[in-house]
Each structure stands twice: as C-alpha cells, then as structure tokens.
Image (cartoon, rainbow, N blue to C red; front, side):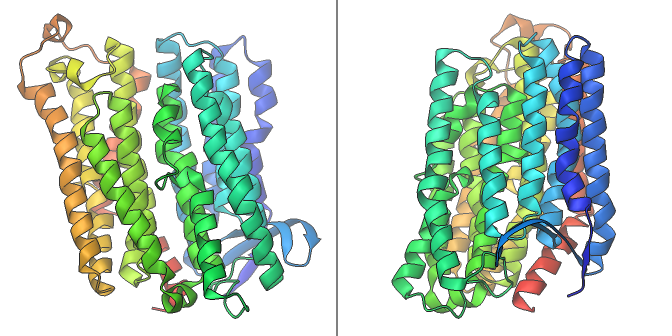
Length: 494
C-alpha cells in the first residue's frame, strides 16, 4: 500500500488546542469565545476531510513526531478505520458546539469557559487516538482523553459529581495503568515493536496460548472506556455531567475511543489469523454478547432518561466489539460501520434529553407523559433516533445491524444472531413506549397542555440535524461504508 508523509494528521490534533488561549482570553465575551470554538471545530473537520480523497484511493498518510526507540514512537497513520472515526468525531464536534451554547446558556451554567477549553482538549485527544500508528501513541492519547474528561464529568462540583468523577478515574485510568500498560510492555518484549500491523504484531512470536489469552483480556478490560461488563459502572455514574458532556461521552469521544482501541487491538496487535487459530475471537464474542443482553435488560428498568441511554450505550458499544470479533468480513464491516451509525443516533437522543431538561426541568421518563404536545419537534427527533438505535428503517442503524446479522451467518454463529435480534427487540421495548406516551397519552403535567414551547433554537436545531443525518445514512451510507469495507479488505484480503 502506498504511503505519503504529511503533517496534516498532527495539525488535525493540534488545531483545537491552539484556540484554548483565545477561548480563555475571550471569557468575558461569550459570543467571541464560542466563535473561536466554532472556528477550531470547522478547521479540524476540514483538515480531516482534506485527507479523505487520498484514503479512498488506498493511500495511507503517515507522520512521525518523535522516535523514542525502534518500534516505539509518537507517530500518526491515517488509514480507512482512523478516517471513519475521525470524520464522525470531527463533524459531530461542530454540531455539539452549537448545542452546548443553547444548553449552557439556557441553564446559565457556571464555568462555561473551562467547559469549552476541556471540550477542545477532548477532541484533540480523540483525533490523536483515531490517527495513532502504534500502541504507544494510542495509549498516550487515551490517557489524555481520560484526564481531560474528568473536569467535564465533575462540572457541577457538588458531592455527587465528585463521587462520580472519582469512580470514572478509578475505572478508566486505573484499568489502563493496571492492565493496558503492562500488556503493552509484554507485547514490546515479545515482538520488539508497538507498530500496528495488518497481520498483527504478535503473529509469529513465541507467545503461548495462555499468554495470548491473558494479554487479550488485559487489553479488552483495560480499555475500560468501552464499558464492557464488568468495567461499565462508571458510565451511568458519569450521567451527572451536563448533557453535552454526556453526548460527548456516549456518542462521539470517550466510549468510542474505548471500542476503537479494542478494534485496533484485535486487528493490529493480534491479527485475524491468530485470533481465529487460537479461538480467542469467540471468547471476546461471548463477553460482548453478555454485555449486550445484560445492558439491554438493565435499560428496561430505568426511569431516568439519561441513565436509560447510558445502559443502552453499554449494550450498543458491544455490537461493535462483537462484529469485529466474529472475524467474518461482513461482521467486521458491520462493527466498524456501527461506530458511525450509533454515533449519530445516540447523540440525537442525548440532545433530546438535554432539550427536555432545559425546557421543562424533567429528567424522568415517568414525568414526560404527553410531552410530545409541547415539544413535538424534539420528540419526533427522539423517535427517529430510537429507530436508528433499534436498527429499523428509515435510519442508518438498519444498515450496520444488517451487516452484523450477515456477519453472524457468515461466521456460522447462529447463537450470536439470536443475541442481536433479541437485543434489538429489547431496544424497541424501552424506546418505543417513551414515544407512545409522549404523543398518544393524556398529559399528567399541566405544563404539557399548553401551546408548543420547544427548547432554545441552539438546542433544537442540532438535534434536528443529527436526526436528519441518521435518516440520510440509510440511503447514502457512503463514505462510511466504503471506508469500513476498505479496512476489512486490507485486513482480510476479502
């Protein structure tokens, strides 16, 4: 495969960091401060987009920042998978920035300058992880993201927020230091490199089957941002954060970096052939299937809307892991494609939850009966996004779940097909009643009997945009589908 050297991956990482001093200086002028945020978000997206034509031609873009030792460097490589993830995260940052204005101003939140600064750091770390060429670079940006997210989780600075923040650090940072770091050192000792390889850097090493099993599960559970059970309880606890942060956590950056890291481990560290010959792929599939089912069942019992969405996210993330761990071309395609499809659907749901809170102060589903009469646009978007997460037309989530289902058949794993279908039924069981009660049940709260009164326009427009994109992705899933197929072809040759 042809490679070219370019500084653009580094620029895509740095651009949001460079505006932080400008955001701080403009703290007394909110309009100026948020203009800088938009400038950086658009610039980041355009830099990422400028690399797309080369990637679609089959070219990889590389850039080495510093070489520490042979096989260990701070280095970027833009391939099809990294481009898919970067396109999703950079485009959604623009929309989330607009939503943040409506939400933070609507609730007159404190510390807005701090919020926008750490938000920018998080997006830099996300792009850095997406473009990482090796385990060392991926680990570095994974940790930066963990630390930068902590002030966002604890934004309200009350007792509950601090407690949730400590839990977040214990799981996410504790697991990465205690499991990922030693696993990375063992890999370097075995292979002499940390550079991701299409065949897997552990392929051909003298590692025993038991050591490979231990290493794999150190990585899978060490990247705790993926919220694979039992490393999941930090995620519902983090719902104390403002809704734009929850949207960042669950749809764009944090959790997606977790599953993205696992995908890189499966494909670039172990490799498809090694996972297949050692049957380790099936072990990961079983863990993912367990998380999918249990997360979906727990979501059924939740009354808090954001907590329901949190447990839904826990289940949906494992769709991605399951698809890749199936090791079948269609399953891997579906898993990678679900990174994008889930992102647009789930961020819409969180935007809707935040808009409801800004407009009515309601957090619990039981308090939202009849709310569709007051907020028809928001609840219509909620319904569309729900269909995407369930995996039903006319939304893009249907495409990724279709490929996942085909992947189970291609891998001759009917049991996992049953898991996928049953979990989609559970998704419908906890999403559809919300929309039904919103539009077709008599309001129990007098405020819902009044005329239409949506949240501020900066809250409503972003959720309309993301819901619309979720529909468009069914009819035009390119370039995400093409990027996923290119990555699968480069790994499997199929």
